[in-house]
Length: 457
Length: 78
Image (tube, rainbow over all chains, first blue to last red; front, side):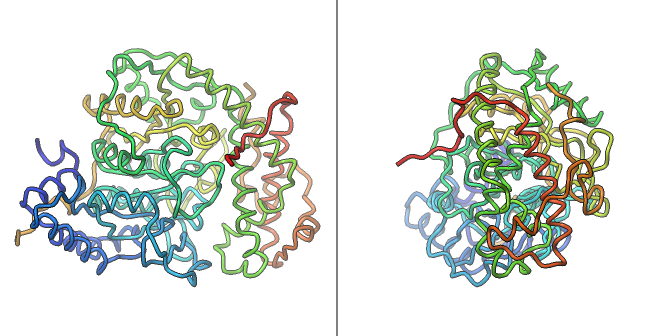
């Protein structure tokens, strides 16, 4: 099995475990690659050099001593800058938190990945406090799409997606509240997973919207995505259902409007390959999106209100105005949105009596240009930063798992959401594996530097 | 299902500071005072625009009649 067929991260681990490469060599080479190439993308905010090399040395020592270094032995990875990394200040993409004490321990998911042998080497760019879909950050700059530097990477986990798409790292971690893993995954052409709400522990992950927040992986192969998700969640994903037993349907209505012709054609191809194309329309999707918007604004605004009272001018201007508006929302509005969420969840569950996996676009089309950050919705040009999530926010409200699947298309990346019932991640993986096998889904990183063997080894 | 055209409020930044011309300008200064928030003058236009946007969404959600036994979806596990 080649390293790529096995998964890039899993391939690196297999080489290190077998003594064909060593962890220190892999980690130092990846750091050198980031230093040499990331000036083009601005995906990385901090390199964790000394700590990463020290951990890699421990992996090599474990192997030399005959101990099991873990399934991801020596694999370098990056984290959106809202995960606690022991010894580092968690900034959440803002200068507002820069004077906080360094984290005294890792976020739970990072601790689990470290225990599996993986090595965090970098923190990654994001919209300030994860409040945005574009990774345009007044403090840390804009992350550029590796496939076209004039275009947005998407957000808020834009650094996480761009680092994988550029081939700087085989996998990264992101968070998804309203689409923040799915949107950059689609625009940068990488695999991403928004797990079922509540399934992956969020201890040590800086919050945005407690009602909607999730954390998940992004990767250059489906195999790596599954492996990292299994470690993050503590769930066994080694056995997938037969894809022939999985009923797939396309979401229509709201999810069929405003979609670019090339993305519609690609989804047609996906459905044709899967052999059936029933269409399901969820009710009141516009109100579902509105409810996610309101809950996000209210909870995010409330979280930051004490700091907004004292030092609002430290915030990114775009974030500040949205948080202030959210903090002022009346309780009646917030409660109505949470009651609507209860109603909508019942409608969504009813849809899953007709199908196991729902297919929907992730965005309306390819990544918007940085100098023209807008998309067309209902015939109007609207802000990309606020509207890239029109197809992801309604799904967030229901808390469903979604596998962001990069389509194997010519030109700029496009992606679809494979949406499952709560806890049904395995069915998403089964469908995605079939699409990958058929050549309909693929991540095509620019230059996977981590896959090159070190000459010294 | 209702059409997106009739249900989508304007997005911030689309039509200037007002953004949502079909909604009255919210009393942002009063709302801020109630929660002890001071909004710098330079920030006010953007806050007003975002507040108008959120009120548009609030009107949309409030326009849907829910049964009295439909509880809020937040959960508490003691």
